[in-house]
Image (cartoon, helix red, strand yellow):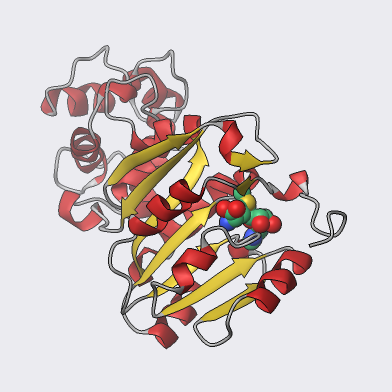
Amino acid sequence: MPAKSMSAKSRLGQNFLRDARAAERIVAALGDVADRTVIEIGSGRGAITEILVGRARRVIAVELDRELADGLRSRLPQGRVTIIEQDVLGFDFAAAAAEAGPRLRVVGNLPYYITSPILLKLAASHATLDLAVLMVQREVADRVCAAPGSRDYSVLSVTVQMYGPVEPLLTLPPSAFSPPPEVHSTVFRWHFAPRFAELGVDADGFLLFVRQAFAQKRKTLANNLRAAGVAPQLAAAALARAGVDAQARAESLSVEVLAGLWRTLFTPGTTRSGRDSVS
Ligand code: SAM
C-alpha cells in the first residue's frame, strides 16, 4: 500500500490496531459466529475483518473512508464480506438484521470522536442486536462498566447498563496502535437485554430522569431533582419510600433504586405523579 494514500486521518479516529493477539482476542470475544452475521464498525485496514472473515457466516463492514473501504474490498475474498462505505451513524441495523436472520453481533475498534453517538445508536437498535464487542478509550470503558458508588459511575453507566450487562475484557497501551493514540484503550462486551420492562420504567422518561439526577455531581439527588422542577416534598417522599438517605447523591444508587424512585415519582397511583412537576 502506498504510504501516502493510506496515511491515517486523525479526524476520522484512524488508529489502526497492530497487535495481532489483541485482534484475535476481540474476535474470540464475539463467541461462536459460524452461523451469524457480524457487523464491524470502522474496518480500517482490516486487522479485525481479516480474522472475522474466516469465522463468521457473513461480515458486513461499515467504513466511512473510501480509500480504506476500496483497499479492503480489493484484498478480501468477495462473498462472505460486504464492505459498505457509509457513516455508521446512518447505518440501518434493523434492515441488516431483517436480511441477515438472527440477531446481529457487532464488533468495532471505534473511531473515538463519535463513541457516545455510536453507543446510543446501538442502544436504539437493541432489538436487532445480540451482543457487541467494542474498543473505546479506557476512561469511557471505565464509565460504561462502573458500578454504583465508584468514581466513574455516571449517566453513561446507567444508560448503557439499562440496555444490558457489560464487562471489560482487555486494556491496550497506545503502542498497540499505529499511529499511537494519546490514551489507553479498553475492549468491553455488551449483551443486549434491556431492563426497562423488568424495572417498570418508561425508557425515555427514565433516562431523562437519570440525566436530571446526575446533572450536577456535587449536588445531592434531592437538589438535582429540585433543579429539574420536582417539588421538594415529592422528592423527599420518594427518597424516604425507597429507603434512600435524604443527602444521597445519584452516583451511589443502583439502577434498581433509581428505577424505584422513578416509579414512585412518575407512576400514577404510587404516591402522586411527579411528572407534572418536572420542567
Ligand atoms: N478496525 C480497524 C482497526 O482495528 O485497525 C480500524 C479502527 S480505527 C480506530 C476506526 C475506523 O473507523 C477507521 O478506519 C475510520 O476511518 C473509521 N470511521 C471513522 N468514522 C466513521 C464513521 N462515522 N462511520 C464508519 N467508520 C468510521
